Length: 254
Image (tube, rainbow, N blue to C red; front, side):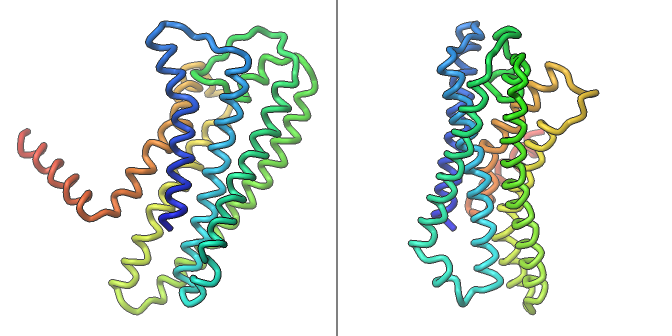
């Protein structure tokens, strides 16, 4: 689990470093410009790290499933070599997904200006600048990616149904609590990741506005990677005790 957490942390760090430093630079220097090559690089790396994060979360779900539903086979199914292969597959899949989307998006001619309504280069905003009907190719690629992501989502749901069935059969309350405590941080991270990304991209056009689009972009691109370490670190008893002490101290002051 800690090996997969390391990979998740690297993907979160990559997401933050892809968008936030450039946005901070533009804010500090009062500019909104980015080079064409820089925009393409930003799209590629953002897609790469976000895709890898989703695949890693799917693998972590499988890790929880094996550890709870098939504990006697854990060493066989999830040995060091198997973990390394699964992590490599997640990064490779993210790389291919990002390369496919970036190459197709930046092969389209941009003839409706060069101003994006976002704080980083995002494919939906770039497609709005294209006047070519070749955007249908991007829709096809999005459909392929959506099928892959939906397959991962179905796997996560199916795994957690089996996990909760197994946990509820544990006779001791302490055992059930321990099993749930290992799953809830991962489930919270998955929900945060999927809910923010889904709402940002599938919101009704009737409620779309530049300020709302900007807020939603920040919500799904910055908030989940920033909160993931906090969610997982709350399993640490010492950290939870320190947070609780800090909260109670603030209440006493007021």
